[in-house]
Length: 69
Image (cartoon, rainbow, N blue to C red; front, side, top):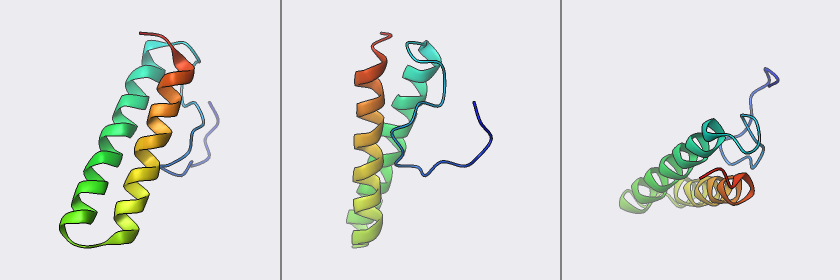
């Protein structure tokens, strides 16, 4: 893995493809995105809400590609 920062909504793998670590990381990304989306909705921050939505979708895509579990 390289050491440069990735945006939270990046669909790039952070661990070896097909690994449990990548699956867990994708799940964490989905969770963070869902929380940001809910908080953005609660405080009427459309930017945060959209960022959370993108992050959640990116985590789902990583999990679809990973297929470890």
